[in-house]
Amino acid sequence: NAGVMQNPRHLVRRRGQEARLRCSPMKGHSHVYWYRQLPEEGLKFMVYLQKENIIDESGMPKERFSAEFPKEGPSILRIQQVVRGDSAAYFCASSPRGDIQYFGAGTRLSVL
Amino acid sequence: EDKVVQSPLSLVVHEGDTVTLNCSYEVTNFRSLLWYKQEKKAPTFLFMLTSSGIEKKSGRLSSILDKKELFSILNITATQTGDSAVYLCAVEANDYKLSFGAGTTVTVRA
Picture 1 (cartoon, each protein chain N blue to C red):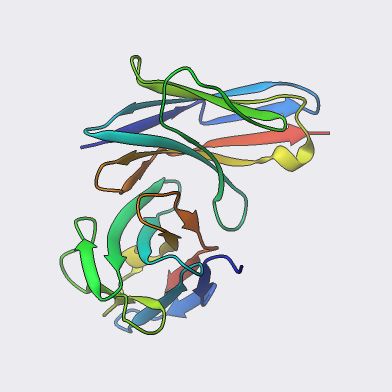
Picture 2: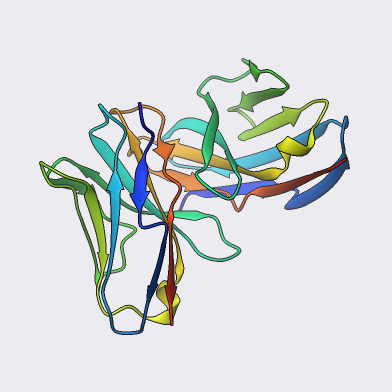
């Protein structure tokens, strides 16, 4: 049973470009969570999704950020018009409902 | 806002030493407390604690929760260089979101 798969592992974007981060949950997990880790800080919750539904996006910046978890395919975290402050490690976790969250290896986004 | 504080922020020990990591929390609608180990990759799940006073053990690692005093400790005995990592404490509320502490960086020297 493969773990939570995130890609790409590293992503470099110039200011103003779009970043797309992908997350495939563990087999059998229908709940996906995205967290952001800024340098020297702890992980911060961004958004919680189930298949085709956003359950809680209280941690998402109001502009430029969006997330989806379609019926088929991975969950996508999309950042439009990236700025230097978006540089961070973005982690995805998955779980069955109400159970332990298992994390992927993260995507490290660098904005030049 | 939910708050999770870990201490110490970092420590350096020698192989064979015992370390104790602390995690205190303030959270509304507490559901569970989790410990993860983070090396240069995915945070790896260690323990989930939901009840006070019941120690969980896995090899040389153990953890316990005190829901009255709102804290947890993680112990590592007979440390090895492979234990070097950042140890993360997270608290889960009823809305299933995890609130993380800043982590404790443990360095084990041979």
